[in-house]
Every structure is written in structure tokens, then in C-alpha cells.
Length: 304
Image (cartoon, rainbow, N blue to C red; front, side, top):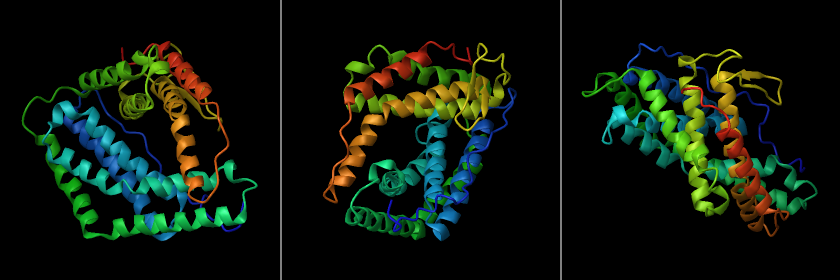
């Protein structure tokens, strides 16, 4: 790969951290704890991103914002459609949408698809990446971004004291996870016939299910006997059991269902510099998504 490319991949991001919830917590108190972690996750990386322009900091900034949006979706039954926190999270998401283009360029520049490419093509993509990062930093410096961020803080202060039903968090967790499970594993017989747009919607629900597993993990048994003895050893050697092992299988679905879309994004970016992505067997990629979903459907959900 060209020496022009320095993505800052060695930068150390602040990653998502475990959240400690108890069965005695109300759902809204639990939401405040979850949302606070997501907000700290995003803001710590945002502060580092401004100075580093590093790929890991951008990625984790986006992950933190996505996790916050997911938390809002999972806890929506106790927040209400017109809750200030729902509006604030939506505003942050809308402002952060251009971050996705910078992330797509990072993934392409860091990948093997550029091996052996002409220097001119890589240089053009690198310049596009720099322009995309300029736009990201411009957004982060705008008063509108600061107002939206402050709105999140004010909204979270009011969450635990909202009027209306506030059931135990365990009750909400089981219902929220089951709803997303039906939209993911429950669709395994239909994925092959779905349109790309419908498969993308399943992928979004998989993302919500995965983050939900992580948010609510502390409410369920964690040992190797949890979830029917589910156990996963990751590529880095980490051993996952219980809810986090289940989340790994959900992430597998998420990745498999996104493979076709990822290829289309790479091809679009390469076309912008007069190149093309290597051909792929899209039918085989879809079949891999079906297989990942079938594996998930065969596992007994840990919250039942």
C-alpha cells in the first residue's frame, strides 16, 4: 500500500465498557446508566478524534452514537415517542450521518483491495479521505453540534423521573430482546428471498439485538453454563460465555448480512477514482448471511 496512507490505526480508542445493572433497577434508571456510558464512549473518542484524525477514534465515536440510538430504541416503551432524549439522540444521529463517508474511506484504505493499485488511485482516495475528515471536524466544531450534545445531557437528567409506568429493567430487557430476536433469527427462512433493502433492515435489527445483549448482560448468568453452555473463543483468544457469547453470534449475522452492501460501497468509492472492485459471488454472500442467521436461530435465547 502507498506510503501516502497514514490512518492512525495505532491510536488507542476508548471502547465500550460493561454496564452493571441489577434486577431491582427500574427500567428508566437502567436507561440512564446505559445512555451515560454510551455518551461517555462517544465523547471521549470525539475529543481524541479532533486532535488525531485517526481511524479508530472516528470509528468508536460512531459506535458510541449508534449505541446511544440503540439504547433509545430498546428502552422506547418507557421513554415515550416525544421524550426529549429521543429527540436529542435523533438530532445527534442526523448531524453525524456524514461521518459514515469518512469511515467507508478508512475501511477501503485499510483493506487488501488496494494492494497493487496504481499510486494515482490510492492518492485520490487518500485526498477524498482528508476532505471527508475535514467535514467531520467541521461538524464537531459547529454550535449546532454543541447544542445537540448539551441537549442530550439535559434530557438524561430528566429520564429517571418521567411520569408513567416504569417496570423493572429485567422485564423490559426480555421483551426488548425478544422483539429484536423475532426480527432477526425469526426471519432466517425468508432472508434468501428478501430484497437488499429488507436484508439491510434485518441487519439493523441484528445490531440492536447485539447491543441489547451487551447492555443487559449483567442481568443474566455469565458462566459457561449460561445460555445452554454457549462458549466462543474469538480470533484474539478472548473467551466469551453467556450473553456475550450470544452477542458474538448476532454480530456474525450482522457482518454476513452486510457483506454485499460493503462490496457495493467499496466499488462505488473505487469507481470515483476510475477503478473497480474485484468481482464477488453475491449469491454466495447472501447464502453466508442465511447460514449465520440459521446458526443464531438454533441457539436458545439466554433471556428466556
